[in-house]
Amino acid sequence: MSFTNFAPIPELYVSHESSLKLKTEAGNLPSWDLTQRQTCDLELLMNGGFNPLKGFMSEADYDGVVKSMRLADGTLWPMPITLDVSQAFADKIEPGQDIALRDQEGVILAILSVTDKWVPNKSQEALGVFGADDLAHPAVNYLHNVAGPVYLGGPITGIQQPVHYDFKGRRDTPNELRAFFRKMGWRRVVAFQTRNPLHRAHQELTFRAAREAQANLLIHPVVGMTKPGDVDHFTRVRCYEAVLDQYPASTTTMSLLNLAMRMGGPREAVWHGLIRKNHGCTHFIVGRDHAGPGKNSAGKDFYGPYDAQELFKKHEAEIGLEMVDFKHMVYVQEKAQYYPSNEIPEGSTVLDISGTELRRRLREGIEIPEWFSFPQVVTELRRTSPARNKQGFTVFFTGLSGSGKSTIANALMVKLMEMGGRPVTLLDGDVVRKNLSSELGFSKEHRDLNIRRIGYVASEITKNGGIAICAPIAPYTATRRAVREDIEAFGAFVEVHVATSIEECERRDRKGLYKLAREGKIKEFTGISDPYEAPTNAELVVDTENVDVDHCAHQVILKLESMGLIRG
Image 1 (cartoon, helix red, strand yellow):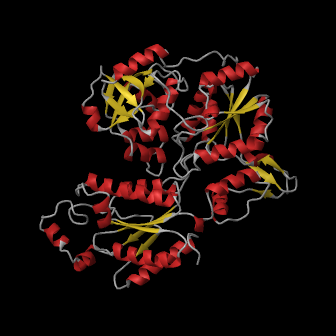
Image 2 (cartoon, rainbow, N blue to C red):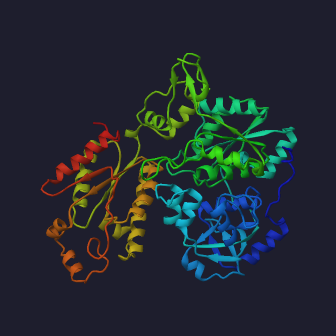
């Protein structure tokens, strides 16, 4: 393999003079506000991280990638890089037009010259790219429930890179890294991809990989978007910085990669390899279950533990860097050091702490042994994830109108206030409608928006260590899931399904709403003319028929105790 990875790589930016001129002209173009994921994709398109792509994919490139991991011209590329937009925006745009791409603040980052506009078959994309059309996969859920229905494709003219206010000195474009390797005289560089904090097993793994490849080490963590529920990147980067001094400075560097991961397993590994090749690396570590999203709806892993290594190996020559494959690293007690799981000396005691177990220990404030992690990393993690009974959380009641949600929620609020220790906020349907959503009607779209607003407020309360109690009808699974993801970034989300039957709800109906709905006087009424999608995996199901409110609220309290959220 020749090591010509240090020559500059093509970028999609125009010169400073042209960018000023284009910025003024782009002011009159139709403009699209980029989502977080699109901003990540655009940054890597413009700085050469996604080389050879020259923009968001055309329909022909997209079809080739979904079907066979190849662009229309035959080049290996495993992941669709598409600009998904809303139907309303797509209706105003025709191929041949230019559009301005802006960040969330409205700053123009690039111009897209639209060549293609199409409605993708998202189920086919899910099957082709992720191997399953299963909403348990975060990227498949994103595809169906977050991404827009229409794709636009075409070349990009880069005006300026997205602004980052954090860790500026740690972010490098592919050309900046290539220049650094050139300057340092590093001919062989092995990249380590991570979305988690580094513990001792990772350090041992990276040391061995660098030794095996006789290469320098680039620790290259992803700080764009990872899996919902992952440790936030601010905490992770502080952890990486705490560990860096365990590495020899002359042979190791760290750089942050603003990539939006798809958790796509084998295809993602190939994609990560191509991106690292563009950043000037010569070797890449592919570990067990690389970029795996966890379990599918049937409780089985989406990908086999070594599928990613096999697919990478098959395309290694074309990717253009060498794979350093790794077995799982475990700690051997008698030897007081780490070994790959396939080299454990016979009869020895193996110690291992899984990610789940680590989270449990952090949550419950249990000791994390020195052999597992560095004290400075544990300190950092404990700062951002205190014991559960010190964190904020949200209790989210869902059920039909008249099921008793508000009554139980009120009782729960009083019980939690009696305990004290954390501020408690009740976000009840009527109160929210008055103060947050007074302009909204009762169409599906408006009801969803109302729930998203409740979720947003609850996530802010949770983030700041309070308790939020929500009691909307929330009939749709996808919306409840989105709210769960928003809140679980900051604390626990406890879904309580108040499973009162529709007959009982009608019997109790003081306002006569069901009667009006049956007469067709109220349109889109949940349970009558509009579906209620009952939760299948709520943390708690309560039945209110022939049971008093106090008992129902007490069941919730017991659940919160068993989850460690409140002290018994």
